[in-house]
Image (cartoon, rainbow, N blue to C red; front, side):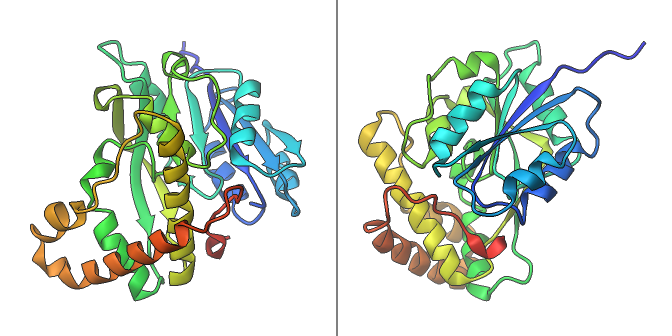
Length: 279
């Protein structure tokens, strides 16, 4: 007799994601057993047919809310989710086959299971401008991503992990907030799971996305203790010095990083802030 798989809840906050959410959901449902997934899509402030596209997928529950805002959408989805482990997934990210099952399995190992897990990150940079590819040639090698929940568009936590916090804060850096709830020993990368993250298709979109991320991170660090600090010199010490052939790419990386930092100072506090070039 085959053993019934435990249910996995997936929460997706979606704002005008009609162009990409279908692919995201199809990847989840492709090899799911009946009743294995509890998928909640919170379509917030949408002016397109995100809700209709999501609802057309079998078993996907859709919550519609008029006001845009990722934190509120995540909290609504969290309240509606039925099971653990709980996966928080960006609407434009595609997971590899079996990724959810692999992450859930890692959270249930009997010998000191982690409280949070994340897939490997694979940046999709094909057909992007040289500047975008140069930026990610450095970014993808930064050691901060070795145990980080952020930057992958997907993470899963156990019931015990979810007890670490009450609600997602209003700041837009939700992934950095979750990352701050767990020590390195309590997090684990699941090598059998991969999240395919689309790099911006234009350099300007990359700068705007990075500015949004930096602004959100700054807001979160200003209002919460224990948030992981950035390491400004890591690109040089840990990436370029051991790999001197990346020096030309590092010039682009530094220029884009500095430009994003300047723009972050005037970034709107209430913006959803995402890369529209990949939608």
